[in-house]
Length: 79
Image (cartoon, rainbow, N blue to C red):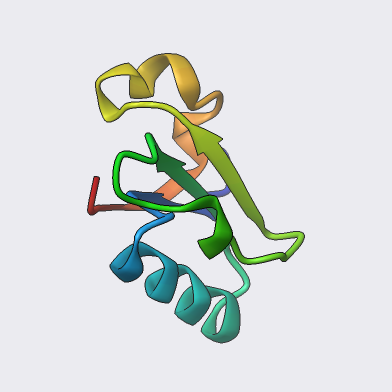
């Protein structure tokens, strides 16, 4: 069984998603993936951290965008 060490945040470039990512980076050792279509989120909200990865896309296409879903511990859906 693969180690689950990733948190996925949809809408991670918006206000709530950005603050949640900032919290997880400060309080955990997890890697964070943000999935956002930037319809209301902004690239200027990205947090520069080696554990944060930003993917542009829609949640409807999530199965094509997330390469290792078995490593995801939790999903926070704000998209």
